[in-house]
Length: 219
Image 1 (cartoon, rainbow, N blue to C red):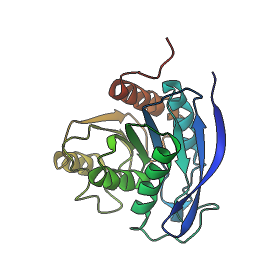
Image 2: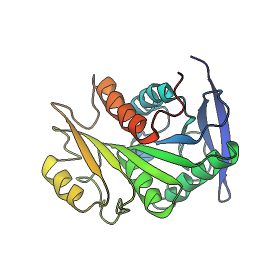
Image 3: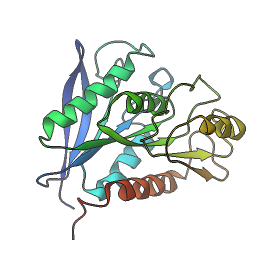
Image 4: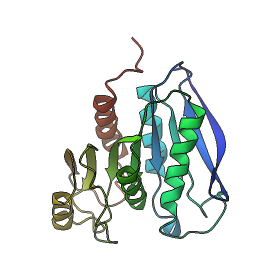
């Protein structure tokens, strides 16, 4: 497979964030995918196993794939805030659109707390066309008031043994979301999906493949 991975930096306000961009090496790409990592105060960063494996699987779509460290994580400047990280997602979107002139849209994926940040950005930014989420942390934090944009299709992958995303709370939360919403339950999985990252990646790759129409796939 062609394409290359490179370390990148981009600004978010007065801070400089670090990321890893996979470039498919194709002219005229029309979309990209940004992957958001879980909570940095609990060890989450762009090197999280699920984030890395999902990003690698998404290369199949031949779209640029960006994963990055939120403020205060890894070598990204600043400190964790809990709210201003939404600006970091916007900065990542800005970076992608600046890097690929003529790009039409971006798609977001997020794991746990990273999903919350992705959904908040999808409500506010018309450049975002879909969201895929892993383990919405509805049992751990308030996830109300986000994911309401009716034009944004969404898919969520949830373990049925996840104490941070208990099934009854997930089902109630899903009822309040806007747009086309799907959920894929992973039997026997908890919040960390040990041994099931391939299943997660397959579900999300298929979702984005359907959304993008496979336009950047090789003939």
